[in-house]
Length: 88
Image (cartoon, rainbow, N blue to C red; front, side, top):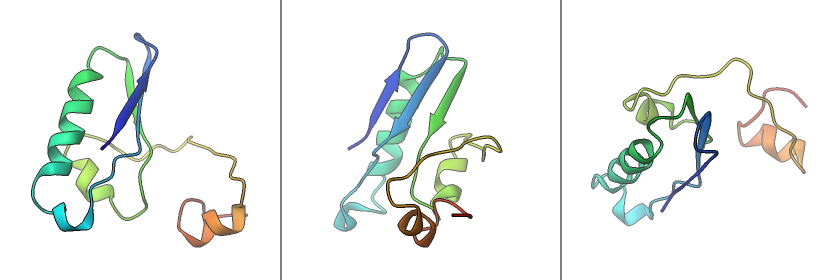
């Protein structure tokens, strides 16, 4: 599963891409992300929120690490522990 939230012009945001462990490595995730990227075409930028460590997978689609992304987490300590942020 996965979803893209978009404004129709400037930004499409891909998030919540998930594949059950028993289906990982079958190409299903590649198919989902490919479809979401295709549906997002025409936007000036496509932003992705993903689990740390999956960057090599998403780089295959052309995604690159942003230097300006920021977030507010309900539990900053847990977000740091899981690798989402590098400072508290």
